[in-house]
Length: 130
Image (cartoon, rainbow, N blue to C red; front, side, top):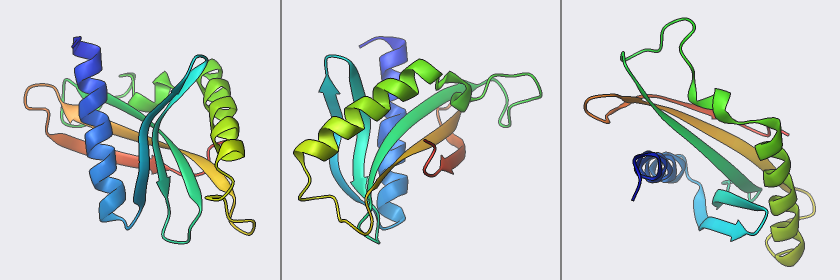
């Protein structure tokens, strides 16, 4: 497994723990299609389906300094469009999960990890980003 893949896997594991702690139900991880991937598919406590993109980054300091890249800086417009397309496809094929009055949304979970220990420095959850 590459270094980048290891950080990605660790970030997704942390994000799942965070979601479960906040009463989300994990439905699926790493849903892949040829044009895109969804890191986590979950259901909020209110039954809304959430497609979660996870971005994790090791930081040199425990808190990123001004000008240092944040994990959320790595979510490009192209990646977001692929995520939207993949989420639409999943929702269309799994409409039994989509509640008419709740629908679905795309969230971003950004995780800062300490560079030397991989301990969590910060988690930021951005809801309904698209």
